[in-house]
Image 1 (tube, rainbow, N blue to C red):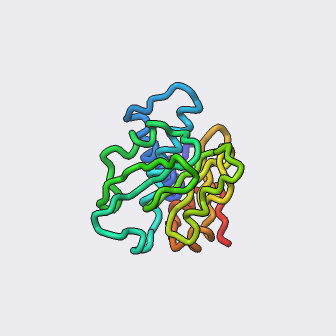
Image 2 (image 1 turned 60 degrees about the vertical axis):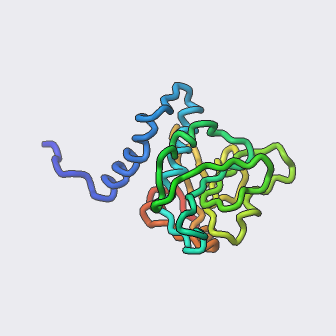
Length: 188
């Protein structure tokens, strides 16, 4: 006899969130055939999808007309992919824009700071965000250490781990829903 009961709610929610997260990946212009490009497209989607699950303090937004800013420093692994993901999107009724820094320091006004790899020996991308309500993200395999969220590869998939203690120290509250999707959570 087959069990026709629906799966437990928690698992069903995770699958639904994951499916919704990847929908823009397949519906947009990011139809990549190379696995590395697909991986970067997934990471670009995650960068944007993290935002609704993070609560920033009011001082993170200086004015009501300010945009929601995703910054990229170091070597940019996304190219046009990240711009395609955020084009026309809004976060908390603010337009979402991407800023890229040519040098080491992060541009001012970042809400999410992605740090790519760099050949610079003194590369310390997260020092500019120290003490500020900025969600820091990096690729654990190719980026600098110390990000609040780090992308990892697990069983051929892009996953992430979260340092919730670091996020809270910067005034950010990460939703339990996002924490539940992480493969590892550091709460110190």
